[in-house]
Length: 189
Image (cartoon, rainbow, N blue to C red; front, side):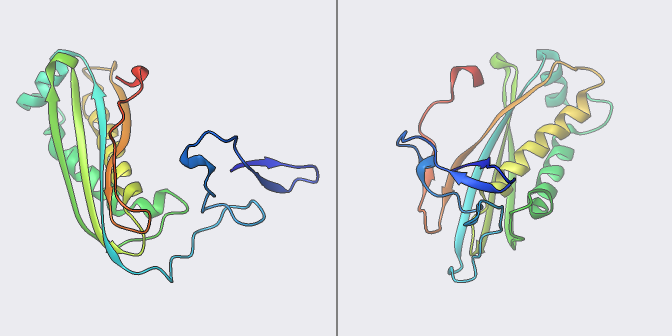
């Protein structure tokens, strides 16, 4: 659904064209009259939910090496980014208006170095037992961790490129499991 403002200023949902994509399904955060709403999950059962998200940060080769060796003046970049990502996952509901506050049971953030691409990859796995999933929490964790990397190294490298960031996997819930199998678009690699 796409929202459009009709004459008289009222927001009305408008369907997207038939592409066979999941965008043809009703958007759950748009109410009957086209206004934003928080989804009512009170009737849903609590189940275990897991989401894994990834973000990539491209930088100069020297900067990547300095992060790996702990040679950044502001301190341990990975430790600070890890804590920032964990905090972001826990506070997602305060940042994203339609997210529910969730009892996060686990946040694990890992880093991988890809020197040939000059990339630091950030991976977050978030878990809960709740009535709704933790995809937004995982995505928020990797994005804030990536922003923190930028903040920590901007004095030595302003060429950093953040992204792409994407959902790699989710498990649990009514919509079932998802694992990204399609490659990223060329512009994202």
